[in-house]
Picture 1 (cartoon, rainbow, N blue to C red):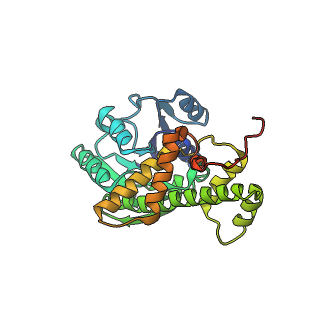
Picture 2 (cartoon, rainbow, N blue to C red):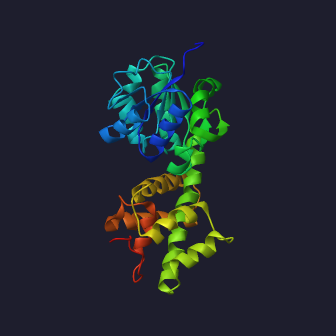
Picture 3 (tube, rainbow, N blue to C red):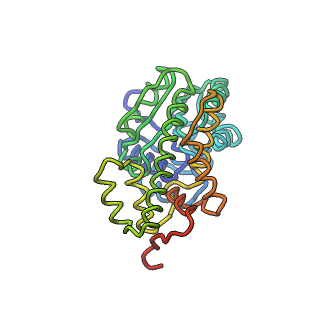
Length: 301
Protein backbone atom coordinates (compact mmCIF):
# COMPACT_ATOMS: atom_id res chain seq x y z
CA UNK A 1 0.00 0.00 0.00
CA UNK A 2 2.95 2.37 0.57
CA UNK A 3 3.13 5.12 -1.97
CA UNK A 4 -0.19 4.26 -3.57
CA UNK A 5 -2.82 6.94 -3.14
CA UNK A 6 -6.16 5.91 -1.68
CA UNK A 7 -8.72 5.76 -4.47
CA UNK A 8 -12.41 6.38 -4.00
CA UNK A 9 -15.47 6.25 -6.24
CA UNK A 10 -18.15 8.79 -5.31
CA UNK A 11 -21.59 7.64 -6.44
CA UNK A 12 -24.27 10.34 -6.74
CA UNK A 13 -22.96 13.74 -7.79
CA UNK A 14 -25.83 15.89 -6.55
CA UNK A 15 -25.36 18.93 -4.32
CA UNK A 16 -23.67 16.89 -1.54
CA UNK A 17 -21.89 14.29 -3.68
CA UNK A 18 -20.31 16.82 -6.01
CA UNK A 19 -18.91 18.77 -3.06
CA UNK A 20 -17.64 15.60 -1.39
CA UNK A 21 -15.99 14.42 -4.63
CA UNK A 22 -14.28 17.79 -5.12
CA UNK A 23 -13.06 17.64 -1.52
CA UNK A 24 -11.58 14.18 -2.20
CA UNK A 25 -9.76 15.55 -5.27
CA UNK A 26 -8.43 18.51 -3.25
CA UNK A 27 -7.18 16.14 -0.55
CA UNK A 28 -5.12 14.30 -3.14
CA UNK A 29 -7.24 11.14 -3.30
CA UNK A 30 -7.54 9.38 -6.63
CA UNK A 31 -11.20 10.23 -7.20
CA UNK A 32 -13.71 8.67 -9.58
CA UNK A 33 -17.31 9.80 -10.09
CA UNK A 34 -20.40 7.79 -10.94
CA UNK A 35 -23.72 9.39 -11.89
CA UNK A 36 -26.38 9.03 -14.59
CA UNK A 37 -26.23 12.80 -15.14
CA UNK A 38 -23.63 13.41 -17.89
CA UNK A 39 -23.45 17.13 -17.01
CA UNK A 40 -22.35 16.29 -13.47
CA UNK A 41 -19.75 13.85 -14.84
CA UNK A 42 -18.33 16.56 -17.10
CA UNK A 43 -18.11 19.03 -14.19
CA UNK A 44 -16.26 16.52 -12.00
CA UNK A 45 -13.97 15.48 -14.83
CA UNK A 46 -12.99 19.12 -15.33
CA UNK A 47 -12.42 19.43 -11.57
CA UNK A 48 -9.70 16.78 -11.82
CA UNK A 49 -11.40 13.41 -11.34
CA UNK A 50 -9.31 10.42 -12.37
CA UNK A 51 -12.29 8.96 -14.22
CA UNK A 52 -16.06 9.40 -14.53
CA UNK A 53 -18.75 7.03 -15.70
CA UNK A 54 -22.47 6.27 -15.58
CA UNK A 55 -21.77 2.73 -14.32
CA UNK A 56 -18.26 2.58 -12.89
CA UNK A 57 -17.45 -0.51 -15.00
CA UNK A 58 -14.21 1.04 -16.26
CA UNK A 59 -12.62 1.56 -12.85
CA UNK A 60 -14.50 -0.38 -10.18
CA UNK A 61 -11.66 -2.91 -9.78
CA UNK A 62 -9.25 -0.04 -9.08
CA UNK A 63 -10.93 1.55 -6.09
CA UNK A 64 -10.18 1.10 -2.38
CA UNK A 65 -13.49 2.55 -1.29
CA UNK A 66 -16.90 3.70 -2.47
CA UNK A 67 -18.81 6.70 -1.08
CA UNK A 68 -22.56 6.52 -1.79
CA UNK A 69 -24.25 9.91 -1.68
CA UNK A 70 -27.55 9.01 -3.29
CA UNK A 71 -30.92 9.99 -1.82
CA UNK A 72 -32.70 6.83 -0.67
CA UNK A 73 -32.32 3.19 0.34
CA UNK A 74 -33.93 2.26 -2.96
CA UNK A 75 -31.15 4.09 -4.83
CA UNK A 76 -28.46 2.48 -2.64
CA UNK A 77 -29.83 -0.97 -3.52
CA UNK A 78 -30.10 -0.01 -7.18
CA UNK A 79 -26.45 1.03 -7.39
CA UNK A 80 -25.00 -1.83 -5.34
CA UNK A 81 -27.17 -4.78 -6.33
CA UNK A 82 -29.27 -4.04 -9.45
CA UNK A 83 -26.43 -2.26 -11.29
CA UNK A 84 -24.15 -4.69 -9.44
CA UNK A 85 -21.41 -2.33 -8.26
CA UNK A 86 -21.04 -4.70 -5.30
CA UNK A 87 -20.05 -7.46 -7.77
CA UNK A 88 -17.59 -5.25 -9.64
CA UNK A 89 -15.41 -3.95 -6.80
CA UNK A 90 -12.67 -6.06 -5.21
CA UNK A 91 -13.50 -8.10 -2.09
CA UNK A 92 -12.50 -6.15 1.03
CA UNK A 93 -13.51 -2.79 -0.47
CA UNK A 94 -15.02 -0.39 2.06
CA UNK A 95 -18.48 0.99 1.22
CA UNK A 96 -19.54 4.20 2.95
CA UNK A 97 -23.33 4.45 2.75
CA UNK A 98 -24.22 8.11 3.31
CA UNK A 99 -27.85 8.20 2.19
CA UNK A 100 -30.54 8.93 4.79
CA UNK A 101 -32.12 5.51 5.30
CA UNK A 102 -33.83 3.55 8.06
CA UNK A 103 -31.79 1.47 10.51
CA UNK A 104 -33.46 -1.66 9.13
CA UNK A 105 -32.43 -0.78 5.56
CA UNK A 106 -28.86 -0.18 6.77
CA UNK A 107 -28.83 -3.61 8.45
CA UNK A 108 -30.24 -5.36 5.34
CA UNK A 109 -27.81 -3.63 2.96
CA UNK A 110 -24.90 -4.51 5.25
CA UNK A 111 -25.82 -8.20 5.32
CA UNK A 112 -25.90 -8.31 1.50
CA UNK A 113 -22.53 -6.56 1.31
CA UNK A 114 -21.01 -8.88 3.93
CA UNK A 115 -21.97 -11.88 1.75
CA UNK A 116 -19.75 -10.38 -0.95
CA UNK A 117 -16.91 -9.76 1.53
CA UNK A 118 -17.44 -5.98 1.45
CA UNK A 119 -17.16 -3.75 4.52
CA UNK A 120 -19.90 -1.20 5.21
CA UNK A 121 -19.82 2.02 7.18
CA UNK A 122 -23.32 3.23 8.09
CA UNK A 123 -22.43 6.89 7.68
CA UNK A 124 -25.13 9.49 7.04
CA UNK A 125 -23.92 13.07 6.58
CA UNK A 126 -25.18 16.57 7.22
CA UNK A 127 -24.13 20.14 6.49
CA UNK A 128 -25.73 20.87 3.13
CA UNK A 129 -23.97 21.61 -0.15
CA UNK A 130 -22.04 24.54 1.37
CA UNK A 131 -20.24 22.32 3.90
CA UNK A 132 -19.83 19.50 1.36
CA UNK A 133 -18.08 21.91 -1.01
CA UNK A 134 -15.42 22.81 1.54
CA UNK A 135 -14.93 19.29 2.89
CA UNK A 136 -16.54 20.10 6.22
CA UNK A 137 -19.55 17.81 6.42
CA UNK A 138 -20.63 16.27 9.70
CA UNK A 139 -20.63 12.48 9.59
CA UNK A 140 -22.49 10.29 12.11
CA UNK A 141 -21.09 6.84 11.55
CA UNK A 142 -21.42 3.30 12.85
CA UNK A 143 -19.34 0.30 11.85
CA UNK A 144 -16.34 -1.87 12.62
CA UNK A 145 -12.86 -0.56 13.43
CA UNK A 146 -11.79 -1.96 10.07
CA UNK A 147 -14.43 0.11 8.25
CA UNK A 148 -13.27 3.30 10.00
CA UNK A 149 -9.61 2.52 9.31
CA UNK A 150 -10.15 1.79 5.62
CA UNK A 151 -12.27 4.90 5.12
CA UNK A 152 -10.07 7.26 7.16
CA UNK A 153 -8.64 9.04 4.08
CA UNK A 154 -12.16 9.65 2.75
CA UNK A 155 -13.48 10.81 6.14
CA UNK A 156 -10.50 13.18 6.46
CA UNK A 157 -11.25 14.59 3.01
CA UNK A 158 -15.00 15.18 3.31
CA UNK A 159 -15.70 15.86 6.99
CA UNK A 160 -14.88 18.43 9.65
CA UNK A 161 -16.46 16.25 12.33
CA UNK A 162 -16.85 12.49 12.42
CA UNK A 163 -18.96 11.10 15.25
CA UNK A 164 -18.47 7.41 15.96
CA UNK A 165 -21.87 6.44 17.24
CA UNK A 166 -21.08 2.77 17.74
CA UNK A 167 -20.04 -0.41 15.99
CA UNK A 168 -23.58 -1.62 15.30
CA UNK A 169 -24.81 -0.93 11.75
CA UNK A 170 -28.09 1.04 11.95
CA UNK A 171 -27.03 3.36 14.78
CA UNK A 172 -25.67 5.95 12.34
CA UNK A 173 -28.95 5.85 10.42
CA UNK A 174 -30.96 6.36 13.62
CA UNK A 175 -28.89 9.37 14.75
CA UNK A 176 -29.36 10.96 11.31
CA UNK A 177 -33.13 10.34 11.40
CA UNK A 178 -33.37 12.07 14.80
CA UNK A 179 -31.34 14.93 13.35
CA UNK A 180 -33.67 15.14 10.33
CA UNK A 181 -36.63 15.39 12.68
CA UNK A 182 -35.16 18.67 13.99
CA UNK A 183 -34.16 19.89 10.53
CA UNK A 184 -37.66 19.32 9.14
CA UNK A 185 -39.44 20.85 12.14
CA UNK A 186 -37.12 23.91 12.01
CA UNK A 187 -37.85 24.52 8.32
CA UNK A 188 -41.61 24.10 8.85
CA UNK A 189 -41.57 26.39 11.91
CA UNK A 190 -39.50 28.97 10.05
CA UNK A 191 -41.96 28.92 7.16
CA UNK A 192 -44.90 29.33 9.52
CA UNK A 193 -43.25 32.34 11.19
CA UNK A 194 -42.42 34.00 7.86
CA UNK A 195 -45.94 33.38 6.52
CA UNK A 196 -47.43 34.90 9.67
CA UNK A 197 -45.16 37.94 9.32
CA UNK A 198 -46.34 38.33 5.71
CA UNK A 199 -49.96 38.16 6.87
CA UNK A 200 -49.25 40.83 9.52
CA UNK A 201 -47.63 43.07 6.87
CA UNK A 202 -44.23 42.96 8.58
CA UNK A 203 -41.46 43.28 5.96
CA UNK A 204 -39.92 39.83 5.61
CA UNK A 205 -36.36 41.13 5.35
CA UNK A 206 -36.92 42.87 8.70
CA UNK A 207 -38.22 39.75 10.44
CA UNK A 208 -35.35 37.76 8.90
CA UNK A 209 -32.83 40.29 10.23
CA UNK A 210 -34.37 40.29 13.72
CA UNK A 211 -34.61 36.50 14.04
CA UNK A 212 -31.11 35.80 12.73
CA UNK A 213 -29.75 38.18 15.40
CA UNK A 214 -31.91 36.88 18.22
CA UNK A 215 -32.67 33.77 20.23
CA UNK A 216 -35.32 32.31 17.92
CA UNK A 217 -32.83 31.67 15.13
CA UNK A 218 -31.87 28.22 13.88
CA UNK A 219 -29.38 27.14 11.22
CA UNK A 220 -32.33 26.07 9.05
CA UNK A 221 -34.19 29.36 9.52
CA UNK A 222 -31.11 31.35 8.53
CA UNK A 223 -30.29 29.16 5.54
CA UNK A 224 -33.74 28.37 4.12
CA UNK A 225 -35.77 31.51 4.86
CA UNK A 226 -33.21 33.42 2.79
CA UNK A 227 -34.61 31.48 -0.18
CA UNK A 228 -38.10 32.77 0.69
CA UNK A 229 -36.79 36.37 0.86
CA UNK A 230 -35.18 35.92 -2.55
CA UNK A 231 -38.31 34.25 -3.93
CA UNK A 232 -35.91 31.60 -5.24
CA UNK A 233 -37.01 27.98 -4.79
CA UNK A 234 -34.25 26.41 -6.90
CA UNK A 235 -33.75 23.16 -5.00
CA UNK A 236 -30.67 22.70 -2.83
CA UNK A 237 -32.71 20.02 -1.10
CA UNK A 238 -36.24 19.28 -2.31
CA UNK A 239 -39.59 19.26 -0.48
CA UNK A 240 -39.90 15.59 -1.46
CA UNK A 241 -36.67 14.74 0.39
CA UNK A 242 -38.30 15.94 3.62
CA UNK A 243 -41.46 14.00 2.79
CA UNK A 244 -39.18 10.95 2.65
CA UNK A 245 -37.06 11.83 5.72
CA UNK A 246 -39.97 12.79 7.97
CA UNK A 247 -41.65 9.59 6.77
CA UNK A 248 -38.58 7.72 8.07
CA UNK A 249 -38.83 9.68 11.33
CA UNK A 250 -42.47 8.62 11.66
CA UNK A 251 -41.71 4.96 10.86
CA UNK A 252 -38.85 4.93 13.38
CA UNK A 253 -41.09 6.41 16.08
CA UNK A 254 -43.78 3.83 15.32
CA UNK A 255 -41.25 1.01 15.69
CA UNK A 256 -40.34 2.47 19.13
CA UNK A 257 -44.01 3.08 20.03
CA UNK A 258 -43.02 6.69 20.62
CA UNK A 259 -45.21 9.78 20.08
CA UNK A 260 -44.03 12.70 17.94
CA UNK A 261 -46.12 15.84 18.34
CA UNK A 262 -44.22 18.33 16.18
CA UNK A 263 -42.55 16.03 13.66
CA UNK A 264 -45.88 14.49 12.62
CA UNK A 265 -47.29 17.97 11.92
CA UNK A 266 -44.17 18.97 9.94
CA UNK A 267 -44.52 15.72 7.96
CA UNK A 268 -48.10 16.66 7.01
CA UNK A 269 -46.95 20.19 6.04
CA UNK A 270 -44.29 18.87 3.64
CA UNK A 271 -46.73 16.29 2.28
CA UNK A 272 -49.26 19.09 1.65
CA UNK A 273 -46.61 21.12 -0.21
CA UNK A 274 -45.69 18.08 -2.33
CA UNK A 275 -49.36 17.31 -2.99
CA UNK A 276 -49.85 20.93 -4.15
CA UNK A 277 -47.14 20.46 -6.78
CA UNK A 278 -44.07 21.83 -4.99
CA UNK A 279 -42.30 18.49 -4.43
CA UNK A 280 -39.37 19.27 -6.73
CA UNK A 281 -38.84 22.80 -5.38
CA UNK A 282 -36.50 23.77 -2.55
CA UNK A 283 -37.76 22.51 0.82
CA UNK A 284 -38.38 26.13 1.90
CA UNK A 285 -41.34 26.00 -0.54
CA UNK A 286 -43.27 24.37 2.32
CA UNK A 287 -44.24 28.04 3.02
CA UNK A 288 -46.47 27.90 -0.07
CA UNK A 289 -49.10 25.88 1.82
CA UNK A 290 -50.19 29.06 3.66
CA UNK A 291 -53.13 30.80 2.00
CA UNK A 292 -53.81 34.51 1.77
CA UNK A 293 -50.23 35.79 2.02
CA UNK A 294 -48.05 37.60 -0.53
CA UNK A 295 -44.58 36.07 -0.76
CA UNK A 296 -41.57 37.76 -2.38
CA UNK A 297 -41.12 37.13 -6.10
CA UNK A 298 -37.79 36.30 -7.69
CA UNK A 299 -36.05 39.42 -9.01
CA UNK A 300 -36.64 39.71 -12.71
CA UNK A 301 -39.83 37.61 -12.61
